[in-house]
Length: 203
Image 1 (cartoon, one colour):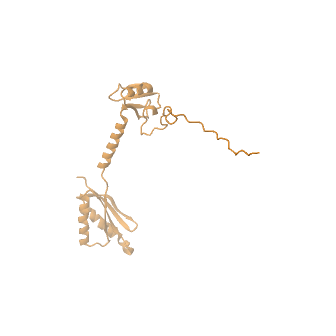
Image 2 (image 1 turned 60 degrees about the vertical axis):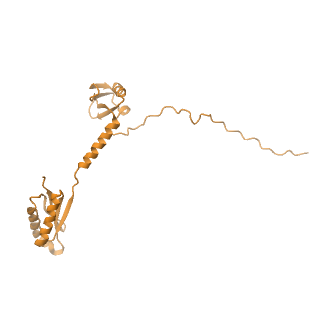
Image 3 (image 1 turned 90 degrees about the horizontal axis):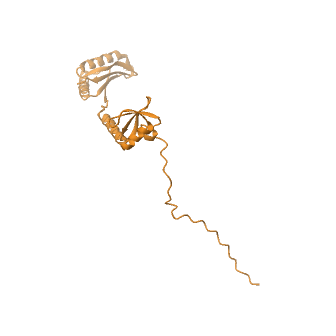
């Protein structure tokens, strides 16, 4: 009897995906669950009523739906500017432009802020007149430039016994600089250093 060759049964075919499967509409996008901005805006405002203020609206108390409709008609954002009152205060404005202006203003304030520079001058308890006058000249320059001056007497070893002498030196230093700066901190002993702080006089 002749044997027939073995033929495996055909594998079932996977169902075909629709031609437009990759391009099928996915439904409306869900709004973000959290507000990523400093202020509550638009749908993130939870109050039922708000007080509208500003130049481009009629000030008054509106339901949140009415206030949002006004903002939508002006193609602007409804922004909560004060949440600590009842009802909260809102403004209708271009929020992205508002954020840009606030960032620009903060940058300008930071640029104008003066940085406090502190220059240190060190003395020994028995500083001679030549060294003293040399450091006094430097201190005058620092104060004229608007920097603070931190002058101190460093006591090494047994020289701490001359702390009264160090205090006298610092008070003399402050007196010689009275036309350029004023004392911010009187002589104070901190560890092995007696320190005095001087700040420039306002012009």
